[in-house]
Image (cartoon, rainbow, N blue to C red; front, side, top):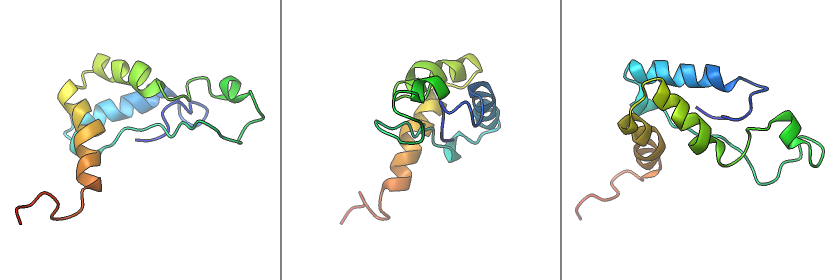
Length: 100
């Protein structure tokens, strides 16, 4: 569930509605939330990123998307699953943490 903040591709409301619907159907354990905002990008002329994509910044996911998901009934537990548990599971090598 990437590219939050690039509303020119898909508006936030539709992305939030999709994530909320999937979470309600039990799919939080299969999603990771992200934005792909960057400190530097050359897609737009210098200084115009804010004009084309004003919500495409590093705070958008935490400041805007998570409250919108909560307003749609996504629980803090589901949000933790999508932001912490799922990436941890994905990036943990097989057998890591197992007793030697």
